[in-house]
Length: 274
Image (cartoon, rainbow, N blue to C red; front, side, top):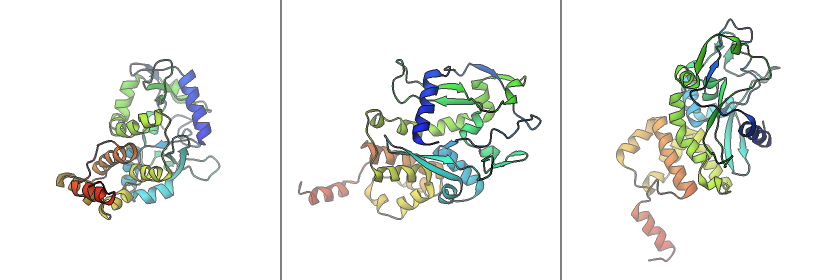
């Protein structure tokens, strides 16, 4: 799906789909005895969040760089300069997911958010739609008849999220969502190519970001306490949280990080300001 098609699809959801809350109930169940089992795991656009990638690359025991090359494609929302990462389907006739097997998902415990939530989706307006910018849930449409909707199991969206382990993904994904829906973009601004590459590295290629932090002068430029430095050396989740702070500083000019006084003084000297 290119960015134009993605935009049109989002517009359709925001305009036409019923806006559901956590209390909405629906009937659905998926298991191996259903005739259409695994059919939804093919020729689909699965957008991956940074937390999705952390879980998946750790499950596969490979680096983030290797994961991106082997299992993903990238697109850019042109009017924002925002890079997005999409799970790459196999190059077979059905374009099946690389992780789906006869008995189901081979990385099931670490499957990404969209797979956990199916058949529920969530949309977050990036502009005012009828006085409301709040995110809402909707039932995902599929071209094939999903027999899971004919099952007797009924639950609310809230119960479904708890059962599928999706809540931790929401919590860990909130800082990412806050950045992608930042007022910088709502005001019509666009990332420069350099900042777009920085966003891509921090959010999706966490191992390369770690090298950027520790194999350059980065640490010496900012006031970062020793505990934080130790925490981000080997823990991907801590490093990603730190990366969000860096993005707010580098992309939007927020004071989420503080430059060391001696670095500022040197810069003032270079500019002839003191």
